[in-house]
Amino acid sequence: MTPIDIEHPEHFHSLPVHTHEPSLPLPAADAVAWRLECHFDEEMDFDGVWQRFLDAVDTTRVRALVIGPWWDGDYSPFDPVLDLLVAHADRFPALRGLFLADVVGEECEVSWLPVGDITPALDAFPLLEELTARGCGQEGLELRPVRHTALRALRLESGGLPGEVVRSVAASELPALERLELWFGSTWYGGDATLADIRPVLSAGTFPRLRHLGLQNSEFQDEIAAAVASAPVVAQLETLALSMGTLGDAGGEALLNGQPLNHLTTLDLRHHYLTGPVLERIKKSCAPAAVADDKADEDFGDEDEDDPERYVAVSE
Image: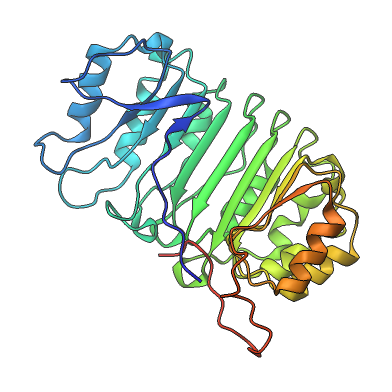
């Protein structure tokens, strides 16, 4: 199974992503998601990049920020970057989308991203509607339980998501949350979350407005599928993602024997280890829901293999 390459988003918070460059014409402040990054060939640290942005753009109209590589030499902690965001929060009254650590493999492996505690971002921006963060357990991706009444989308992309972070998500009060995506990753990179950590999320009462749930990139994807098969939250969902992990026939059979999924618009199973017959049965049972599947080739889930080695899509 080929690992998935993380790519920079072309759009974020329904806005085209625009990397701030002094040499380029400035778009309207509220027309793009502004991406800030340090360049390897530019002698300017993130403090300089940040100040240059503040001087050039009417930040009172900025609706979304994307933070790319923040180091100008050796990798450095993310805390000073987050400190800048928090210190200048009053200059961003319109900010509704925030992407922390939009970094791809050629810039830094996800398992090396020292993101740290992202809770201050939620505390500093009470009107924030969308938060995405990328990082790994070994480098201290952290989140404390929070109460945030505006957040509608939370996406944690990790090659090793700590169980403490998952428990904090489940313990948070997020009454407006409509979209939740958790990439669990590998135990090798600090992904020690368990099924018990996500059980509160599977209840119907934790996030009453949830419409999309992604429990993805997991080494225990079969267990997740079995839990989802009887989870009360599924009835309120419009889309469900069990992709990027080690889902095999055991998890597939659990889905087939569980509650109906044909009320969904999409069931995302991309990057899986299902055999062809089980996959086809899932597609038929879920109709008219669309089953997203990018592995229709017969290079996976070979019935002649007793126990093929399985990998999550994103780890290192």
